[in-house]
Amino acid sequence: MNMKWFSNLVILLLGGLYGCVPIRPIYVSPAPSPFYHKESGVVGGAIMPLVEPEKALWVSGEYLRWKNKEANIDMGVLPHVVLSDDVNSGNVFLYMRRWFGTAKAENPWGNLHGGLQLAVNNYGVSKDSLEFPVHFELGFSPGIFRKRFNVAFPLRVGIGTLFTQRSTYMYAGPGIQGSFNLSSRLVFQTQFNFTLGIGASDKAFYLPIPALITLGIHYKF
Image 1 (spheres, rainbow, N blue to C red):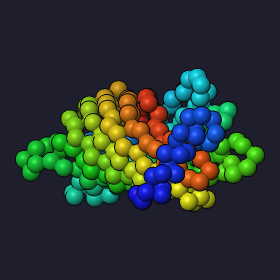
Image 2: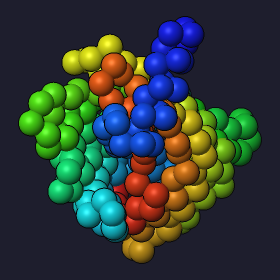
Image 3: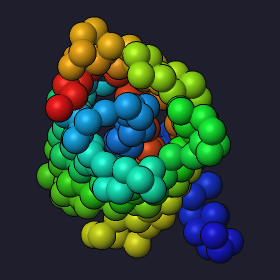
Image 4: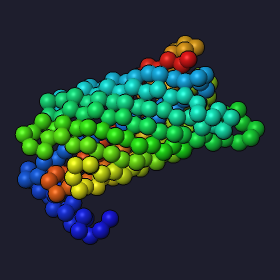
């Protein structure tokens, strides 16, 4: 981060607080689900209405499967859409994950993932309304992973840019995930995300944010 970018960010932040510069959200994907015991894969989704003042609806899905089960590597995709009066956003997060455990343990104690998110955002203004954020993320998730339930504490950090403008944004933060089996195939999952971010271009101040809470059902196959 150079000093020119930092000084522009400070100016835009102060200007945004006083209404001089638009503040535009960038919607960060939920963390990958904390599922370890699965057959070929898992597919599911979550929905989260965002209350005033956003008046937004956040809908996300997920598909994941083993890439190499012997090496404890899986991969997945997390599409999500946010619809509101001011912003419409379509996103897809592609990730790969490596699970860690001891040689004698049946269950892992954590995982490390890396991923890339691509997005298209329509900010609903007459000029420069369409923008294309892209960012790379790394995350580490220690936890308790069992066949019938999982509890994880993901810690994520990401950095990105917008294709249409000279810009940089970054985010970081912890989260809490939990899941338990409703049946042999259905899994209930919830997430609490506390990720926060900051970023700016020459024309706007950007706020990378996740959905604070997500609730979803997944199907194992």
